[in-house]
Length: 300
Length: 230
Image (cartoon, rainbow over the protein chains, first blue to last red):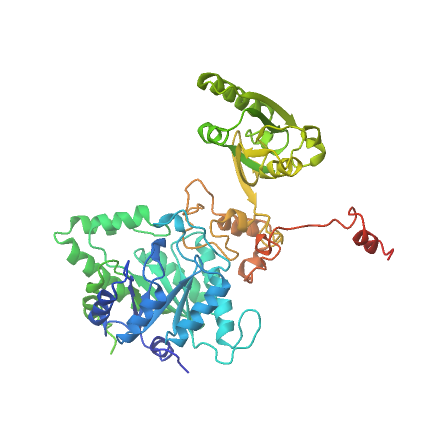
């Protein structure tokens, strides 16, 4: 049985498309609604980030519900940075009651990177423990063991970063997440295909592709400067020099970036164990419809 | 040991504005070792205060005393009659014990108490323990992720770990990178795939201020019960 369109798509063996939407910085619900309308039909489900990069934004719960109202299926991100196990369970029960089904369990960017570096972080749970707690909730018990008359309906996701270190341990940690309850996994953006293929080979050797749906992350880059920023400033990224050079030499870097992203999507779709792609187009969400059309993965 | 660092002098001067008699109270234990509040540092602060008083015409009477361990009343009792302002160069514990001993006196902090750690090279002190009250070092190859991971993850490392470093600071080793490698080195790879469940934080600060009663030493019923006498 599937509780969401994303789950149904993956369980029936179709290639899933998810895409990221950054909630607005203030109460611009109308802006979010317009973006949702513009993106409708471009993906099976849309991630609503949870104060991404530790910057204050509209909550992922509210943003998810606004997307639901506009006919988009949300993937609600829930970080461990800002909520303890009480708030975590309460927020997820509330979101499920409002119709949210897909929940992505993440530890969250450390607050030093955001606009409130003075904040006290929580980390009562880590992302793996969050999965354990939310699976338990879905199975009808809160973490204290009390039975829930009406448990939340949830499709639980996790993230994996094949480009962080120590490399081999990343596959073990993915297995830990699957053990903890992850049903789908979205990876960090793939710019270094060779390393990603190596990661997938190790995951397939362990049989993880049969226990969890792996959705590979992609990102369209607008310029070589954007690529350099990813390479030098974003922790846990791997950006090959050839890619930076290709963007630098391009007469129209934006078009080249789109072309490269489409090429990556095509390559990823042929890798064993990859069951979908997740598109992160930071502050460039309007390009998503074109990317899915040109790569032939627009959901039917 | 407790790691502390000296407060900037202007901040200290701000606390002492209304004083006339000041005792700079040093400690020969932790804050002496981390070069923040031992005899030498206390004397230097005392001299700075005297100079300030002279330059600004404050007419402060300044003295300095350094005790063996400022967190034990026994060492502080001889100072209990002091009526001026105490500038404590001991950790926050020492400052509070002195305050309890002299409830009428103002005790102000001369240092910022930071963490429980160890010296790591000349003048470098690094946090090692968060005092969570439920030690799991046997599961993490003797490296504490609560104190040494920026997110206190029990199932790390997070996606920000690269080249053995923490994303939060390039001067900080990733504790989980160290744990993974140490477990392999120690032949405990079996622990690498095991999920550590959510922690019980009650023995930590979340249970309120902690009180530990040593059954061997505490007088009274508890001790007699422990001995099986009642």
